[in-house]
Each structure stands twice: as C-alpha cells, then as structure tokens.
Length: 584
Image (tube, rainbow, N blue to C red; front, top):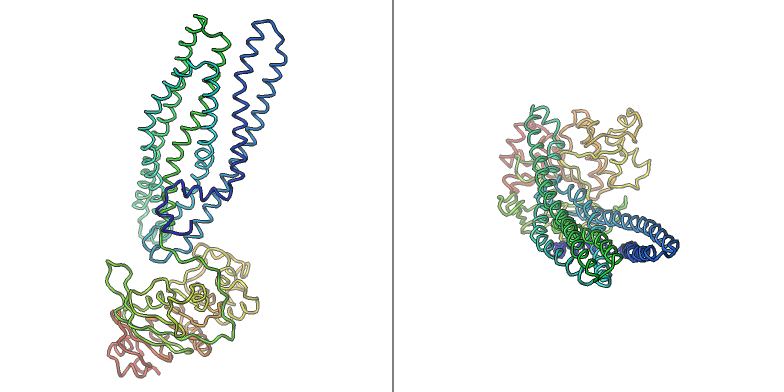
C-alpha cells in the first residue's frame, strides 16, 4: 500500500481490502452477528404461520407466542451487538487509513507538494477517509450479509410457494435493470462532489494562510465570493449525488411495494381457488416485507460503494504522488563530530520541465569548517543551493557531494540529521516555544536549551513570556515578532548539533544590535562546524572565510571580501551599493 505506483493502478476495492485486512476478524465477527440477526428474523414468518394455523384449529398458542417473543428479543440483542462491532471496526478502518495517508503525505517530495493544493490534500485525509466508515459497514459487510440474507429469504420463499416467488422476482428484475442505469451516475456525481470539497478546502486554506494580507488589501468581499462559489459548487455536486442515490433507494422501495401488491393479488386468487391456505399467503407476505431489508441493504451497499470508490480514488491519487522512502530517524551527530565538506560539480537544475533553468552548471567547493557566504542579485539561485543540499529537489545533471560522497548515495534521514537549516521566512509551528525549539532534537536537555537560548539572545524572551518556554506562540508564530521567529529558527537549528549549518537570510529581520550579536555567534559556530550563509545584506558576510558570487544561475567568482571587491565587478557594485567598499 505504501508503493505509490502500485496504489495508483489498483482498483478502489483492492485499496479498501488493504485497509480492512488488519481488522478482518472483528469484521467477520460483526458479519456473523448480522447473519445471526437475519436468521432469527427469517424464522419469524414460519412461527407466525404456525401461530395462525393453531388459532384456526383452536390449539394452544402459548408456545408459539413464547417462541416469537424469544426470537424478537434475540434479534434485537444480537442486532445491537453486531451493529456496535461493525461500527467500531469501521472507525478502526478510518483510523488506519488516516494514519497511513498522513504518514505518506509527510514523506511527499517537495516538487509534489509544490504541484498540489494543501487544502485539497487535507480534504483527502479528513473528508475522503471519513467515507470509508460507511463503505466498510454498508458496502463491504452490507453486500455480504445482505446478499446472504437475500439468498436465504428467496430459498424460504421458494419453500413456501414457488409461484408467488416467480411473481416477486419478475418485479425485482425490472427494478434491477433501472438500477443498472442509475448506479454509474452515482459514482461520477460522488467523485465530482468530493473533488469540489477538495477545491473548497484549498480555497479556505489559501485565504487563512494569508488572512492579514487579505485584510490589509481590503479583499475580504472578493475572497468571500471565491469561498462562497467553491462552497456552492460543493453543494451542487453533493445534491446531484444525493439525487441519484435517492433515485436508487426509491427504485428499490417502489419495487418492493409493487411486489407486495402483485403478490397480494395473485396470492389472493390462489387462496380463492384453494391452491394455498391463508397461513401460507400471510407467511409469504411477511417474507416479502422481510425481503425489503436485504434488498435495500444490497442496493445501499452498491450506491454507497460508488461514493466510497470516488473517495478511494482520491486517496489513491494522493498515494501515487512521488514520496521519499520511509526510513527510521537517524541519530544526530555527536558534539565531537567532524564538520562536513561540500562540493557542487557542474550542477544544472530547474523546478519543472516547462520552467527555465535556475542553475547552469554550478560548481564550487566548501571545505570542512569555516563560513562560506553566497551573494548575488535576487534570482541568482542562492536559496536553491540550500534546497538541493537538503535534497528537497534533485539536480537534473551534475553531482553534489557531502564529505566526498554523492548526496544520492546518502540515506535521507542520515543526510538531514547532519544539517541544520534556517529557512528564509523562518517558519514557526503552532504550539509552545519549547516544542518549536526541540522540533529537531527532542532529547536536548535543559542545560543545552538554556545555553542556546543565551547564544541566540532568546533568554530574555523566555523570561518575559507568561509561561516561559511553555507559552504557546500562536498559529505560525503570530505571537512573536519577525526577529524573534528568526532567532527561534536559528536556535532550533543549533540544537541539532549540525555538521553543516545553512542560514538563508538569517539576519534579515534583526535589528543592528541583535544582528551584530548573531554575527559573532555564527563566527563562533564556524570554528567547529561548516556554515553556509545566504545574504542580501552583505554586512553579514564580510567576515566570511570565502564568498561565492552567483549571477543568473552561475558561479562567477569565489574569494574573500577583500579579493572580490577588487577582482569582481558585480561584487564590487553590490558592496558599493551597500556601503561596504571600505569594510574589512
């Protein structure tokens, strides 16, 4: 099931069976209880016929009444137990599907995430998996138990009167032909309804993710129209699916009512001619009534499966997205671990086949230990260097090596355990400040945390917060300032004890005092590890051991600040623009 390619080509029922397999014995137990419920119900018409015959011959009916009472009580008790077992199993199936799908989504390759709408992926984990509940009980079990009960009922009806059975089956076959036309429409409508729910989720996630921008732009009315349009489309498609499901259910109900009237007419004529007795007609009519439940159960199972198949198809689409292999987390480097060396050799890369190249043969070497800065105009490909090092993307050609070993040969957990990465926008997750700091190293002790807090000048923030490190920072860290979020991201990276530290615009939101302090911290860290820094503010990189100048996806020069100011016109222009021409 974790194999995306396999999941992408299998029919929906195979995926359903994969989710059900761990719970097959409890599901079987629930099915058996449902069959027992049906069996006790099948005996009721026969006991009723005996009761009528006893009354017509003035015989005692106490035994028949006790039997009827016992069957009714047993039917209710076993039915309730069976229903509970089935519903509990269905909830377990939903849980298993959600765990499997959410785990898979966490391993998605970044390019797959780039091409997807997060809100739609969320809908597949929530609303689509919820439909598996009904599919498990109504479709999988319902089709089995309903089918067996239907077959047993038909056998009993044949024993009571084959002629009336033929009349009943003729009416049911006509209804079956009508259902054959309706059922495929349910599948199409259900799929479109689930897709519409995904679109609505994507629209909502888009707005909530940039709500401050929406409000600041006065765009609430326009975005409201977009959300309402998505909600209305979901409503239209859901109503369409409900229309066809209702048509299927009503067709089955109409068939049974027609069968009852026809049996009553034909059976009444047979009673008048003496072919059968009144007790036989009453028993057969009871079976006709009893036939309604399994027929509706089978029809409901088929229609519900069409809805579930649409949801399973959407789940399979998510499981078919490219993902990283599952692996156990790798241990973090020890404090005494040697710093990493890095090299790019003729690396070419673009984000998609229909987009221009970002890197055109990038080549450079970074020795172990020390600080290397990447500078250049916006769009030069500096941040992409970091994304390639983390293997969020793979180069189209060329080689990237860490410690002389190609990144493609590293196990991803082991590779990333050696790297500390501070992204450009320094994301902070909803939760406590402590949880954010320990995201990359949950085993860090309090002394280590305090030391890193002091290093990144977060100790004052922790002291000011009402609950200290346990204070919740809000959605995406909205309770923290931009500079505080940036320092939290840096502290999080340092707590991983990285052999290679990547800082992408790590000081862009810091004031002059904190920026100077962080420069000292980075310089200190660079003595024992390898630090790579991307910066537009060249004041943060003048003390770097080496500077890589990039332009239009190429490396145009490598050297120290002093060498590049006199040796590279682009760097000299950038330095002059930022008043660094005389900096040491």
